[in-house]
Image (cartoon, rainbow, N blue to C red):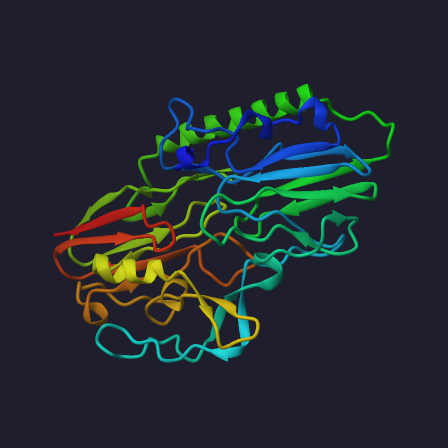
Length: 355
C-alpha cells in the first residue's frame, strides 16, 4: 500500500516453497508489491499475513518486514514490552522554543526506545521461556527477514510493539500431526488481505467528523489511512476545534503547527542517539513526544505561539497502556490560514482556515 514500490516482495515470500517445507513465511505489513486498484496511496496495513500459522515442532517461521514493524515474542505468560518507555535515570533539560524560553517538559523523564521492545532480543530459536524479537528496522535500507525456530509445542502469541493491536500467533504441534498446506496458507493470506483492501476502500470515503473537529486517519486495527479528515477545515474566529484520533487505530499521530523548516528540523531528529551512555541509548525527541504546552489544556492559537507559531498536541493514540490522550482541543483566536503536519508521518498535512 504506502510506498510499496520501494518494498516489492517476491512471490516466494508469501508462501513456503516445496523445497522449504520446514519453513513457513509471513509478511509483516502488506503482502503485495503495489496498492491494489481502488486503494488510496496513503493507506497502509499494520497486520501479519497470515495472522495465525501452524507448524511442526522443529520448524521455522520467516518474517519479511514490509514496513516499520517488529516481530516480538514475549516469554509465555508475560506482556509484550513497549516500544518507547520513560528513562528514570535522565531528565529532559535545555530544550527551548524559538523565543529562547524553556519548554514546560524540561524536568520530565526523557523517553527512550525500550531495549526489550525496540531492539533484537534472544537467539535463533524460541520455546516460550525467554523473549525473542527481531527488533525495529532502525537502519537504512530494506530490513532483513527474521527467522525463528520453534522447539516446543504450544500456541505462541507475538506482536509488533510499534503498532497497537498488530499481533499474530504461531501454533506449534507435534511432528506427524496435520498442518495447513502451502495452498491453504496462500488462500488464507488472500482472504485476509481482501478484507484489508475492503476496509481501506471504505475508510477512504470518510468525509471527516461532524462539527468543529478534525480526525487523524480513518482506521481499523489492520488498516491505517495516513491522512487528516478533512485535510482543510474552515472555522470562524474564536472557534475551538477538536483534534482527535479515530476510535480504533494502530497508529500514533501529532497535530503540529508552525514553520515548515522548524517542523522538519524536529521530524528529522525523531530519534537521536545519546552517545554519553554505554551502550548508547536512542532518545525520542521530546518536542514531538510531548505537547508544546502543559496539559491538559492547550493555549489559544494566534500564529505566533512560542515565538514562531509552534503549537503541538504531542503524541495522540488510542492505547490504554500509555499516558497519551486520544484527542486535544485548540481555540483559534486570530484570522489566518494555518498549516499543520503530523511530526511522525510527515506526509500527513492539514490546514485550518480561520476567518
